[in-house]
Image (cartoon, rainbow over all chains, first blue to last red; front, side, top):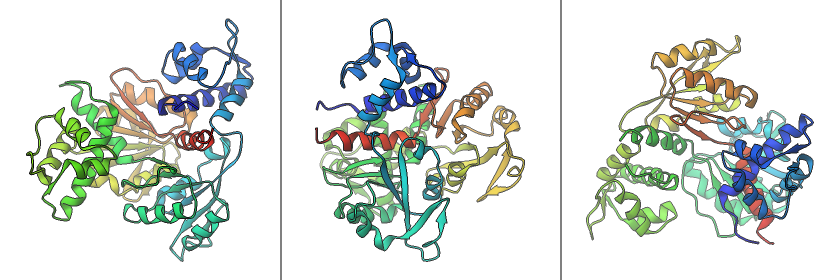
Length: 208
Length: 208
């Protein structure tokens, strides 16, 4: 398969979010113009984004909302359930464990891990807090597909090495540090300070 | 000033994080090779990234850690304090209000807003929960530079219209919806479901 740009995947997510929203309202067809407006792009870009994956829509008739939703779910890998565990039951980890938006898109939180004995065995929302010591065994047993990492930066690489060793292939890190993973492991990083710095850079340099 | 790519700004943040880390350990000089390794790039890219902003470092001697840190802080707009308010005292909003990493980079959380009377007047960590009704007046009075938006998607555009009307020029949104802002307002969006979808897309399409 052709290498697809990250920005394309991001737009596919946006299109899908919009399609599911209007689908829930009973709308049956939509246009590349509508999708473009929502995705902050052009209708030509929408058609190009979708063309990577086949032929969708009919000229003059637009796209069937249920059909295109279903295709996009399949393209994005959402035709199946994904089991996600959170490592680190701090503020961010607990907030994510309680975040209802994941289940809507087919993501199931299958556990939250911590090393603090006072937390282990408790619950965050409906999610059980498990002992970090069992992380590798649980991953090796196939309990989790994706790890969301919300540990302090100084512990992050150690955890990554352990979960990668146990067979995990996808990590979403909220730890404010650079992480090294093998080439066959997908890593994405959300760094709050970095997001704010992109804003302060823009605010500071816009008037020069 | 020349238009700087988002990916360059992101790397500058990474370089700065690394420089502050080794600076705290007393390291005085570093090389473009070290910066490249940390930033997941090449030393030629490091030199190119920095060259947009002037001439740094000496051939064969590398970069002075304190000097380059200070330059990068200035470039990223971090030579001043930024006042940040959070709108929405839900799980994510409260987690961010308690996040200690912001202060380290010069970001001060100046308030967290909510419309729930039971929350207003309380505190999240050390941050006072204020009444959303006073948001516009507080922004107009210059109390906040940046808004971090952690409200439900259905309320997000309404809040954005209100804060933009009151003069805010930078928004970091965690609301899972597309937002419209005028051209002179900087908007960044962190969408957790979208991050996970980038991972499931990669996991699903890698073996095709």
